[in-house]
Amino acid sequence: AASFTSRGDYRLAGLFQMHAPAPRAAARPLVDGCDDAATFKSHSYSLSQAMRFAVEEINNSSALLPNVTLGYDIHDTCSEPASLHATLRALARQGRQEVEVLPTFRHYEPEAVAAIRPDSTQLALTTVAVLSIFLIPEVSAAPPADEEKGSRGVTV
Image (cartoon, rainbow, N blue to C red; front, side, top):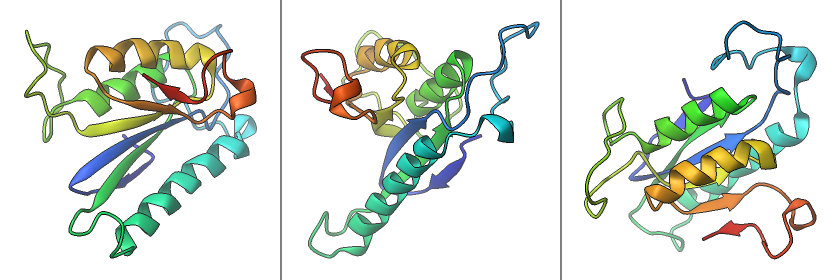
């Protein structure tokens, strides 16, 4: 389940690594194993709260996006399986639980219209590969100094 959810006409997916990955000694990868308080990352949590604040400010303004309400699903992407699960949840069609692969995505309507991707390069690789197939725009939560050369935070 999403860590934070707000309904709206258009929804954004926030993928933030709020906990460090679990040790790799686990017998199987955990999708929901992101709740260890010892591995909490306050910086990523702050980024998720900034996203919530920005969406609320936009929704409360009559000058920005009038008659439109933005929503969000914010997920803790503490591991690659959790990141993939959150990415697939963002791609599920509105009101459904599965992702459909169609011959054309011209009329495909996923839950999220855009994504704030993880600031971890390792976790972002999977997210970028999957979301780009569905033509979902992404923005990096990482500051420009942490981005790869040539990138300024927007994935095209």
